[in-house]
Amino acid sequence: MSLQTVSTSAFRSAVRQKDVVLVSFSTKWCPPCKVLRPILEELGNEKGSSLSVLQVDCDASPELAARYGIMSTPTVIVFHQGEPVNKLVGLRPKKAYEAALARYA
Image (tube, rainbow, N blue to C red; front, side, top):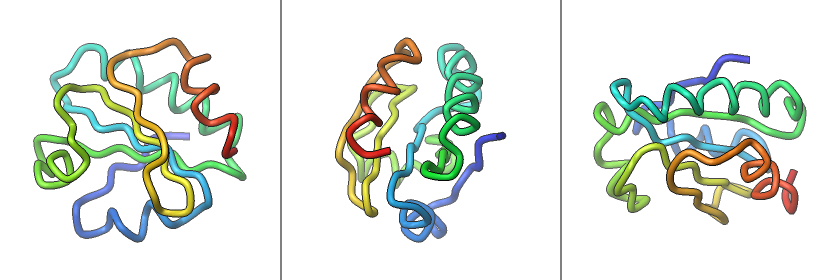
């Protein structure tokens, strides 16, 4: 599963696609973001029916980054029923993302 990049205009409906949505706020030039990408793709493949994984390019959508208080990349936010419920800042091991999702997905 490849990560779907969402724009500001599509964001609201995108985080409501499924009960649980993982959103990666990243940039194209960020090395840790590049390392994170396959981890999130793997999570999406493993939990595909119950989880949607999206990506926001902070350079292309600075207003979204500001709205969710993104100060560094990568930052991953777990949305449950369209609302942010968990935020992980910086590159973490896969188990950290699994733990953040465990309560919801």
